[in-house]
Amino acid sequence: MALIRLNNVGVEFPIFNAQNRSLKNKVLNLVTGGKIESRAGNLVVIKSLQDISLNLADGDRIGLVGHNGAGKTTLLRVLSGIYTPTSGECTIEGKCVSLINIQLGINHEETGRSNIKLRAAMMGMRPKQIEEKIEEIAEFSGLGHFLDMPFRTYSSGMQIRLAFATSTSIEPEILIMDEWLSAGDENFKDKANQRMAQLLDKTKILILASHSRELLEKNCTKILWLEHGKVRMLGETSEVLSQYFSRSEK
Amino acid sequence: MLKNTLFYAGFQDVLLASREYWLPLALAWQDVSVRYKRSAIGQLWLTLNTLIYIASLGLIFGTLFRFNLHEYLPNICAAILTWNFINTSISDGCLAFINSDSVILQVKLPFFTHIIRTVARNIIVFGHNIVIYPIIAISVGYKVNLYALFAIPGLIFILINLLWVCTILAVLCTRYRDLHQVVISILQIVFYATPVVWDAKILPPTVSPLLVKLNPFYNFIDLVKRPLMGQLPYASEWLFCGTLAVFGWAIALCVLGKYKHRIAYWL
Image (tube, rainbow over all chains, first blue to last red; front, side, top):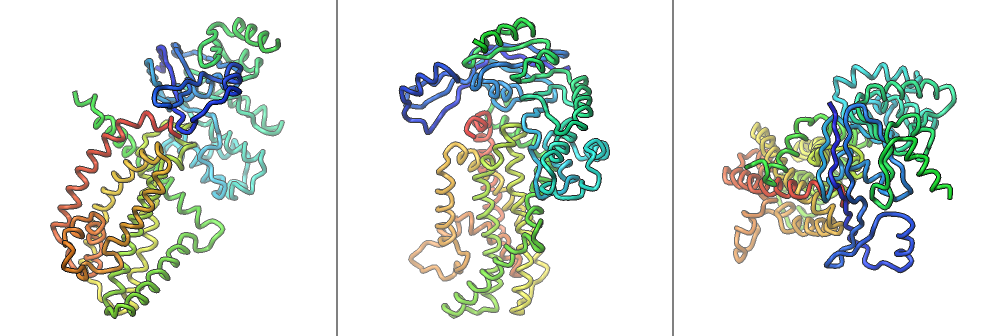
């Protein structure tokens, strides 16, 4: 049973080195980003998120949309438990894996095989689980003898294959993604999409931030539209997306 | 009641990290093993540097101040090796969170994991460097006896203390980035003020011996140096380091408990 409950969550960043704010920045601020405020003692804070309330349970697939700087990444980090909200309440239950950077943990000097282990360990797999899965991951990556070569000798397509194969071998309850995982060349694409579908089937809650309408329509049942760190709209996929995209096009 | 204290919050972080101890150990191992890629002797290059440093320093100082090299060389070797371990652990510890920022911002791990990784990496390096001691001892014909084994519990005492020092410094240095440079300067001063290359016996009578006796770094180094030199460490030194560990840990757990929710914001 996985569960996410946010109650009036707010996130404020202290910016210790921003002393002056120019008028130009103030104007730009109206167009993008959260609110920059100056607190007593000249400490500048960025209000990245304000008053976010959200309830997610098993089976929910939620998409995040919003302009650059609307607070998507910050919200993803709150949902992964990395940022503890500065105001409001936040309850997250369930094993959470975030696939924001699928190459995290990979070392370019190590061989493919040890990188599978490193990457898997970074996602919270235990040594025993890794041993069980490594053959399957190695096979799926289709890298054959290259697995015993250093990662730096791989072409970028091969690097993605290895990272993809390892990253999708997890079984999270809550899955957090920033854009879809792309998987290199055409031959691999079908296999990869199939594997992504399997991963999503096993996932209880999906949180996907994306700019792609097609992707969101296909995978999400709910959409959260963030603007200036606040919830602009939360509702059915088709409804929110049609409003969001019609506004963007103007 | 207890569950709401800062101490408990810090304790929980340490407990969670210790339960998954294999992860920081594997990462630390990998940190060092990467140095062997594309280099036949890898980490041992640094050991070689240390050997040259100790040998030349020992010979020059020993000759200048007319020390008995037979005893002075092993003495300064044991002291410098231990000092280097403490020194690099602390200065690395300052950067424990800053260097792992990409991990911290993507994966929720107990913060103490990064501290274990840093200290474990330095232990592995120390394990490389310790081979210098027998080399020096044999080359000057100094007899090492079984008391040398007492260096191991001494090392564990140092370790327990380093972990709390690094925890506090890692938190503070993430918030105040300049602090790392300050720590490096302080360590430099400590190196000169602590009997590492000089002996505590040559202290002039006008200076209180307490200045040395109450120096934690002197006590740490002695815990490893004396056994390596074939003498039992003083019980008072064990007691001193043990007491320091208890108080240090209490503070470290509170600091960690208080600020662990802020660390990600500071990165």
